[in-house]
Image 1: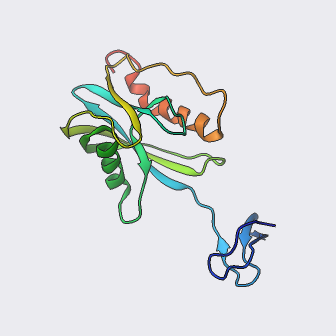
Image 2: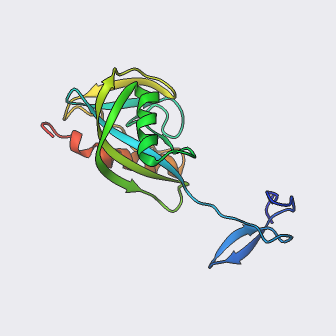
Length: 173
């Protein structure tokens, strides 16, 4: 039995087999509480021939260097969210250069859409949930150990960061 209540009628939700999975459903009105991953936009930004990374202040992966990223809000597209997050977290206006990758994992409740981008204005300045912002030359991206503690999200996000920054980890790109 679930501890949550139906958002439609207030009845306590129960688990039911729907579509081959156990899902929360209201026994009174039939409402199904679908659990879908939240979309996150990520910007892999080149600024003055260097990679822009922020030092994450908050979980997941607090204390790790990562590209600026954040949730897509209602009323904006994924590209708009990527541009907004870049502005909020590292002070840069950006243009998107193409899709870098789409990342998901069954036990993680987010889906990341990563774009390659370049700066078009502003200056690197840590903001929002970034403790610092820094620029890294090719071959100088910090080596960060895989998290040994933490959640599945921490370990998965670490792999995503490794993947999107891979072109920057070798000298000359």
